[in-house]
Amino acid sequence: MSNSSSITQFLLLPFTDTRELQLLHFWLFLGIYLAALLGNGLIITTIAWDQHLHTPMYFFLLNLALLDLGCISTILPKSMSNSLWDTRAISYSGCAAQVFLFLFFISAEFYILTVMSYDRYVAICKPLHYGTLLGSRACVHMAAAAWATGFLTALLHTANTFSLPLCKGNALGQFFCEIPQILKLSCSHSYLREPGLIVFSLLISFGCFVFIVVSYVQILRAVLRIPSEQGRHKAFSTCLPHLAVVSLFLSTGSFAYLKPPSISSPWLDLVVSVFYSVVPPAVNPLIYSMRNQELKESIRKGISWVFVDADKLAMTLQK
Image (cartoon, rainbow, N blue to C red; front, side, top):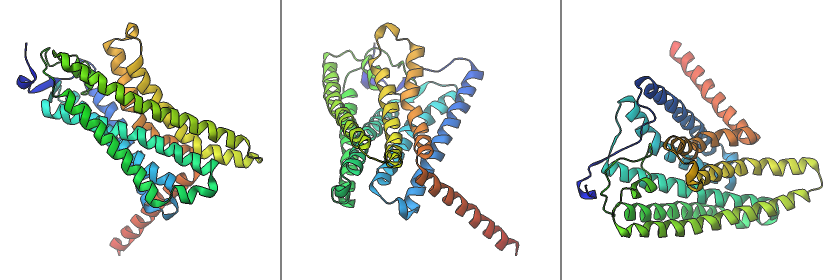
């Protein structure tokens, strides 16, 4: 038996004990991580560089890309490092930092997605008031509120979780530090405080979910009233990427935490956790760039501009 004061590290759940498969896991996660860095980095750079994309929709998309980068960078590097060096260890402070950062980014991302649904609602249902309701100051305030709420949520959960005494070992049944797995190591009745905080967070999340659903019901009604087919297609094309990202985010996260215990197993939990923590940050840039012609064109121009400048520099050096 041990307590939290004597725990200096936690042991994460490995994907496999076979050395060859560990290296395969490393290369697979490295590929996913580089794809996420490239995709989100292109979106951030393109929106910051192209003046035509300095609109509320793309401002919130830039925030989403930043949060995706933070979320996947919190988890994957440590997991890849453990597979490469054949270890399971993560320090106590490293685990606390991982819990805080993951909760911060994932919570703020959900709040940003909620704000983005409001942006689409105003753009389609109240287009004449778009400039008034979503001015630059209002956009900054809403984005700042999403980040601040995510920070507060992560701080409360992390502080409460790591204030509990731990006496059931230090092995976690997950490939990254996660609050439910840490709570399983607790030997204190005060662990009931964390479910209380989780219920509070779920209520806020449910409120955001209801807001998103109501927004899209109103959007659907407004779009169906548009007389021209081209107008309906244009309206849908601006909403479908966001709706797809929200659906992916909520479906993977809900299944991870609400699946019946009867179908739970360490391997299934591991796979499901990858789908809700790793896949969305890597896939979101692809979803937005595939459905958004304006963004695709700006990315294409940016890449062409880089290559043209590189060619000019090479010719200059040759002279």
